[in-house]
Image (cartoon, each protein chain N blue to C red):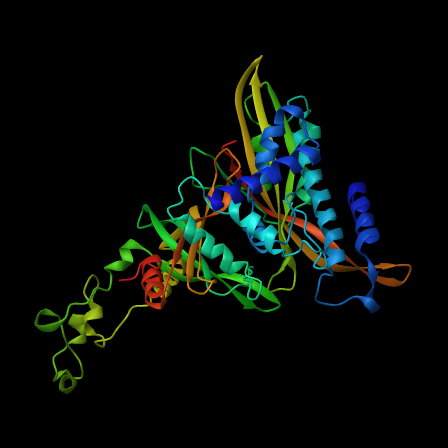
Length: 278
Length: 193
């Protein structure tokens, strides 16, 4: 109930301000109010989350009493959640909002915030076919500024590429191979064979390196980005994800679509799931 | 250097220039950032005007070509437009010039391009080479008509990269630093509105 009230009051402020200030062609009034309400960039998500701009997207000066104002933040936060498909309870929402806007330890987000990343679903051409490939991207400091970098990838053909057999049935170099100057390597290192069978027991392939190699060799060719979303572990004990909602209405743009309260173990499990790890 | 560019440069000087002695090397002062935002928006508006002229069916070919040249000057070399529609989520990539040519060649009797009075300018973030980068978001309404009939209509969101770089010039033997803005890649996505 409170969440709905906050949302409505947030929207009302947007609409009233839009009515008063927008200088627009009359038939486009409604559209422009919707565009104004939309969280148009991730940058705007951060600014609204932090209470650093007004409802028209104009930045507050740090000395402005509205800057990072807790009441303003609560109002903005109410419109930063996906209202149509949200699968979390109102009490969870309230708990989260109270935590990030608390007077003693408020939490703010920005591009350099800790523990958040982008999941970018792309298409690459591989062996003559267009195939989905997921890139996990992170922001890092470099040189005089910051850059987005690829932290990891997930690609179906790679998943079984280095599946290693274990025990009695696996291929091996017998324990006296040294006496033969390892001449049996000739039979082990062959195309379409299982060279991974001849590695240490704890061998773990670095699939990012394989990906980079394939891109360099021209075996993987970038085609397009299909969609992306962002995952945040920046608020201790919480996880939320952001998706872009391209639809008519006032609750659009970059919005929180998942909100979960998590402990350390759940965080670890969730990260494995998001990174598509076993 | 064309006249428009000189005008923009003049705006940049008036708005953001300062002597080398007092200029911090690595930071964009918040007041200066506002001036840079205005300059960026000015360039984006120029791009909007050029797109309208290029898309206008009554613009003669020679004039459209000349305007394409001018529009291209706003961009960093190699800039691309990444276009997606509601029907097709994959992004198609075009060089800026190719995008303009496709716009000019659209098969409608009349094309109307208008811009909504809504924009959003991101913060400027510093990249590893020391230049600053930001994104200006604007919305465009497009209508293509054949005869009296509306054949196609869409509203697109345009997220426009802006690069901000500190440059130097000599005026009357004095070195003046100024911030220059140049456009980069543009992401064009159709909206559901």
